[in-house]
Image 1 (cartoon, helix red, strand yellow):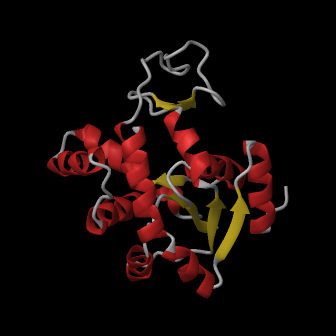
Image 2 (cartoon, one colour; image 1 turned 120 degrees about the vertical axis):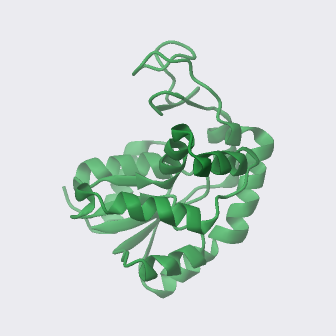
Length: 212
């Protein structure tokens, strides 16, 4: 199965992708992680990406596509994959076909703006192993310290309140048209985001027609 997960920043796309990847035994490809890894590499492309993200802007399509195509060529993607964070707009969706990338489903996580702002404001990330936490719903065992590697947790630059508002504004303007795009292609499946991850995953599996 090949699918993409849609939703506003903080809707839970990464968590959903990770859970479905385990169940379906296929990799999840997070464009956000690809971008952060490129930033960490110290390349000139990574430096340019860092400048854009730190200001709350989306990275240009050609940059994302370059990293994505490179990743999908790896052997673990041959039996399917989950795209987390791509496409973000109809232009990117159309470019998938041009790149030879075809999707079986587009899974939309529907979550209110109020819930998203609350989630992102409390999110913490490990700069070393990229593990994510939340001060209320998924706090680390030791305050401010990663459970996995012991590094000090940080608040991502794009989780600052003013940046969150800008990201949501951009999402509603650029990304929401994807709902209509995938709906017209009969690929869209909508799942209401629940407070519990297990309930949301269960609903998503039912929507995708996957039985355990």
